[in-house]
Image (cartoon, rainbow, N blue to C red; front, side, top):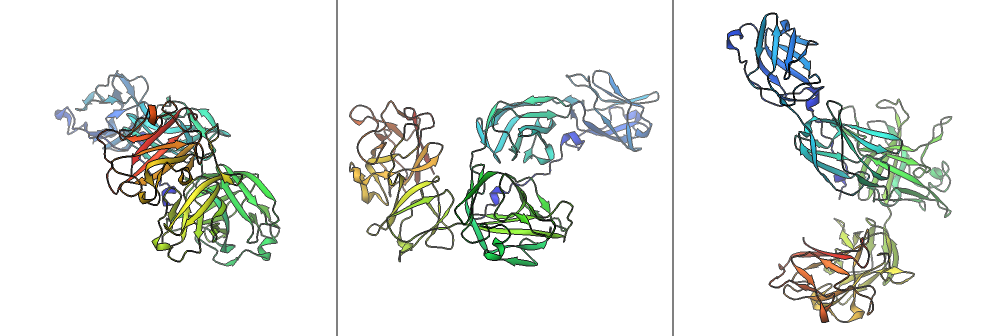
Length: 568
């Protein structure tokens, strides 16, 4: 599936601050003067200091002053034609609004519709706490059209984002993208109005350890490296080579098939063929779009690295060889990444170099298999002749279109054991620690297990019951959250359940009524003899053939666990 959702479109918003008409205007109040001096339309009718107002009428090239509410006049008038003038809203106008009046000699004309004053304010900000690079922020409020800039705290000073680069802008809502060079930690964003006033948003926690769009391990594609036309070609168009000794000469240990690179949070790790690793940081800026000569998107963003570059990240021209740390992103899908570079000043059809990578695929052919997996990593499950008849657990695997045995891993990075059950035709997955089934750690990391009545995988015909040997391992999602997804009537009963979350695969520590809570209207946490057991609320019946997602959140501590149940 293409990651087009990661290529965020930049709405070319025409802001009120540029003077674009957004409000209807009225005929002049003084019909007697309409043949000479008149106001036919003016816009916008809601204004702020520093904003341009357009006035259309007759005889306007003779206007000597424009009076705003509060008897504040402007004499600096830009004449476009004899029927069109522009003025900048001055400071000190009445906050209550009022008449707009034009003066020419002994004539004055008052617009029929009064001027109102914009008063931008912020009501809500979401998400309201932790945000990472590339996250979308939604800000609601009133008169939001008057914000013309957002200022983010950057690693090297303020990052200023103009309104034209907002994702969306309207009178009641702004949508912004967190830029790549954001500074980690708690800080505030400022919104700047047309008048230059700053509105400070509530404090946010900017985190750089969120998963980035390239998360996972990447290796050379078959056509790996070469040159072509800048702003024209999307892959090498003149010369190319595959991974091998010839490519390895440019950067020893990096140009052969055994080399790889891992994007993990803000970290980029380059793994050389001799086993050594080079580590640094990276950031992705999806606002850095470049157009081809026809006006179509050529680059969909920019990758910037620090202290490390991509595999064989060099400019190879004789006498000009140098390492490269900034790359144009030409293509990005689930399993393909194309990067390009050309020196500053290169024009269309000039020389650029291209790098082509694909995600590393983990191949499993014998079971049980102990493997290290990363979220989003392709996994090929081999050795199964009738794969189309097997049930695939959505908590751990998502099918890749066009293949019966290739999947995308859905849980967090870690060590796992994959079992192949040839009787029930499904793969069971467990979290490992030190080669053994993982247990829940005091800090909320590790594994959470499910034992009890009313659920089972691949179907409820394989009901767990209170048999600890059949405990189901929940999928760890990161952030100390764990998930199990069950379809009513298939993996979970519609009318009666009675199961419990445990700290290990087997008897021992488990969540009790005082350590696990829920606000769900579908289930409750039992007390007494059923202390900690998850049961359906009275008179609740789950909807058949509908998936329900159970998530245990331990981010508040293992004694403050929260269970959410979502109907999918």
